[in-house]
Image 1 (cartoon, rainbow, N blue to C red):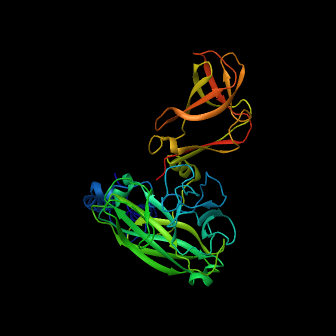
Image 2 (image 1 turned 60 degrees about the horizontal axis):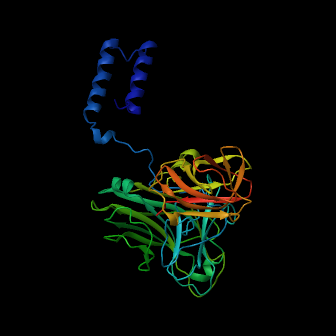
Image 3 (image 1 turned 180 degrees about the horizontal axis):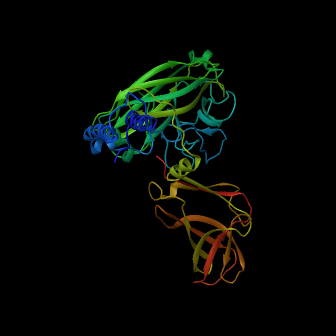
Length: 405
């Protein structure tokens, strides 16, 4: 049963306390007062329907709105280009679930998770810096996030409000007067991704039934964070939604101070923004590992994956994933970073405890949403049919797995 409203619960407590204290103006018998309270509760409950009791775990449909999760690290990341953001491990993403894209043929838009210059918004430890690195760039640079169809359809036929904090970087005033834009865009397809973009009115993915639901410009302060909002009404035909926050540079200015910082981005149902919804770090990380997972090579001897020797020099491995991913990883979504793979990075242990170094590790052996197939080639022959194990060697290699949009 739905909980009592605060007013009814308070009345019940007050009535019982008053009776216990023998307050004179509550002079009805106890059973009469209780009957009155029960009648009020019955009246309230009669207006409650299954729809009114439905709730969602979170108000905010934007993932990682305060950029607290950054599995790819905090280095400056070159944004996507006319080819759009994509599911590869380096496809324009910096903070988890956030892609930066520019309508140019080569990377000139950048993003970076930062903790200073400017100092973060109160309540957050970091923000996202969006900027350009070329003075000739005059195309929009946008931070983009696509909401998956399974969640976007919750908003069909509903009013929504986008809210975010932003602050201009030092170079934006001389460039375009500290102006940025925000866009809510929609489509009628399902999870079509950010793989291609067009430039009008800002960078937009090639959704089926693409529409700009709402757009607005804002003039930022270069010395303070301010909150900005954008409202819209979602058509019932919408199955995918994306949010873009952009700036369009001119020929004046360049470098890492020509752009803006972004924090506490929220898209929620309603017509007015509520306070930013903070979520536990563990909840955030588990949610975003559906889209991206990074395995840093551990110390020597620590196991990563188990498998079997399909030949004397080939070990087929199954690497379990911590969360079921959005889709089964494909070859383009599995990349190796950090120290280049060699005999000094990951190693293979066979069933007789002999340590055999792998010359390379390739994506293969199939993949599902819950496990990744890898194949390692051995430098020393072992015995087909034996078990084998992928272990760290402390070499600094990294395996990245992405199924992001």
